[in-house]
Length: 450
Ligand SMILES: *[C@@H]1O[C@H](CO)[C@@H](O)[C@H](O)[C@H]1NC(C)=O
Ligand SMILES: *[C@@H]1O[C@H](CO)[C@@H](O)[C@H](O)[C@H]1NC(C)=O
Ligand SMILES: *[C@@H]1O[C@H](CO)[C@@H](O)[C@H](O)[C@H]1NC(C)=O
Ligand SMILES: *[C@@H]1O[C@H](CO)[C@@H](O)[C@H](O)[C@H]1NC(C)=O
Image (tube, rainbow, N blue to C red):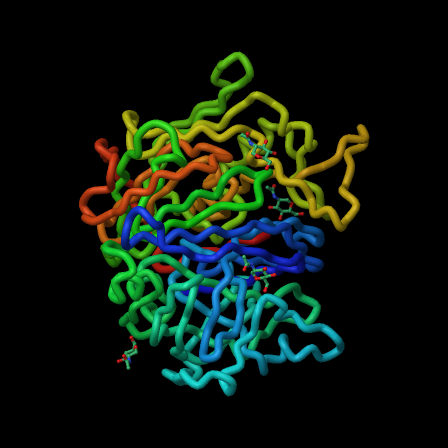
């Protein structure tokens, strides 16, 4: 029933502005940068689920952030882009975490000063609430103000203003989020059963886009930029055709609250194109850009962890030798059904270097250790986070209740944008892969930045 997510960023950020694509109206393209960030203390950031995960004291987080401004005159923010939640929330400038007591100001990516905005509106005091499975709680107000990304301004945007956090001052960055999920994924929906128009809904009602849909291209692990395209697709950024996957509703409420699709099977293909591991699954998985890693059912994740020779270190978590990234092995994920689309991810996409500012742990052999990007879900929802999503071009079609998916193309600089004018029809997507799996999880999901 909870949502939000805390992330910790210490590195500088840079983003390019949102620009309306010249050739096609009603499409907004926004580039974002990915930055290595560092969490100095153990944290568990999965929301809305009873998860236990290894707590690390040294972590490399690779977050996708976008620049935005709020208020009049504009106040600047870098916010984490999250498909797994649906609210925008901002740290409040007067929150303890932002006041810099003991010399620690954790709000370097932006904190909102309501007294300095002439367009600020207090909506509902104290109702905004985010909780974490590690008992961290954040509470605040619902507010409304002008929210701008690039040269696009949304008026009367409802947001959470985070006033209090129970977490210690020694935690990392107190980081705001922009959730781009379903209105039903808003935290207020689980509290009072109603919704407000979130960012995607406002972009449509203010006619910046025709359909509540957007495409996400994260590019590869080595790259520091990716892009989100609101209202369209960019056919230059993927190979083959997009295939439609119906979004699976929550089994209890029957409504769609998350980007849950069916994973039909996983195969690990070795050097000589030989299958080294294959597992039929037919399970629900949530596509969540706000989650750094990928979380699979425990037995499968443990098979994979032992299969790649990863070790669970008490200090650094699940690690592999970094040179595993050079292996020709691939992870092939097939969605929908046995005729569905297969996304091929090279093993290197799951091998994450530790942040450069800490001296990297080493194996006894002398090999440098890297973090491993597939972990057990521990009974929580299966999440396909950034370690998977970089290999896929994904169209998140909220109005159509579908996802379009294709194999991504890394490092393309060209672009061929097509507007989505009809939510029932993603341009160029001709095939639909059926397949059903029960999603028993309701509401917003984890933003697992571990
Ligand atoms: C994004 O914001 C950060 C922090 O204010 C700034 O350093 C960076 O230049 C901005 N990027 C762009 C493209 O505006
Ligand atoms: C602002 O948005 C809220 C929530 O969507 C709505 O109830 C209210 O009527 C809007 N106010 C104006 C002035 O449009
Ligand atoms: C993409 O570009 C980065 C450098 O920005 C490079 O390290 C990486 O190998 C490239 N990926 C591919 C698949 O060519
Ligand atoms: C790693 O070990 C910790 C205990 O140190 C445990 O809680 C965690 O579940 C283990 N993770 C895996 C993937 O084995």
